[in-house]
Image (cartoon, rainbow, N blue to C red; front, side):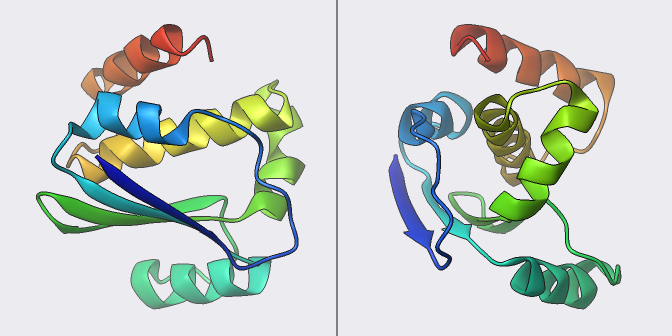
Length: 125
């Protein structure tokens, strides 16, 4: 598992076992990047790739079966964490795990939710 983390903002990414979570979901052969972006960049990506003209907490883009990119808006995540009854750090972990399963090719479904829950339990999230 290769995970590259790049923070393009002044926001502080919580200390979480990102690489271990990614390996648990995607396996050892996967190459993944986690890019922390501004609300403006999040909105631009969401508009361009999803047709939605608003910022969003996290976006995932599979490149191929062994490579993908995740874009995280810390400001949006901080605003939304209380809406999901989660702490900021816990919500970041929750979102990251969710994005990893999208990179794995899963769509929203009870199967995806069950697999996410297993990983969240494994990492006590």
